[in-house]
Length: 260
Image (cartoon, rainbow, N blue to C red):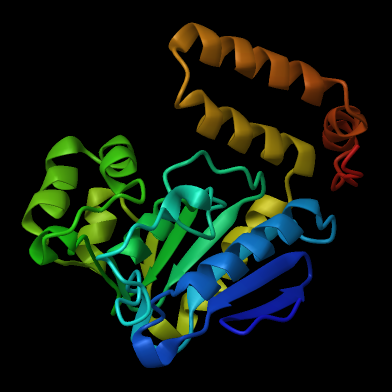
């Protein structure tokens, strides 16, 4: 795939998607939002891709949200036209049932945080920082942050980030549970790749069903969520991979997943 605002490459089952507007701290305009949505749709059906790594170009910023020089805030515009693929923005349910790993290489604020909260695994460089700056500008973080953040980290820390508008560094983000690991900048992509490889060693249909159960289950009541979980489990147990996994374990060999 070729894009104007993104860099894209595939390598051994992993798709690397890089926000490529470093001159404006990888902030996104409407064109980038559209290209992220296009990438999402392509990745949904690409059987060669088992995991996605999302990062930003350069060493200063992962993403700093909307580019205010290109998006007028004084005219009606509906950002929620774009549902959330874990690669874009918006509060809707993530429908890319492949693991998305964020490699946060610098500033991750405003819409960048909203994008981060739609990913599954988060690796941060030591120089990364995180924050919700909209209230400082008289704006509202309407891309899902007020919904997701209190569900993903402890309530007092979520409110600290949301109400103060102050940034937290990578160490504090790890302590809060916002990111999975902090590494030196030069090790960031290698660490993200390592996590992708660990996940890809598992059965693809099982991983897809787990992510779907978790993310859609969050908007269901407990009864509905348990029912959905059982339905997805039944689907997975009927696959060839579900027979291959226990057989490979018994024979003390690596399983050969077919995605069937």
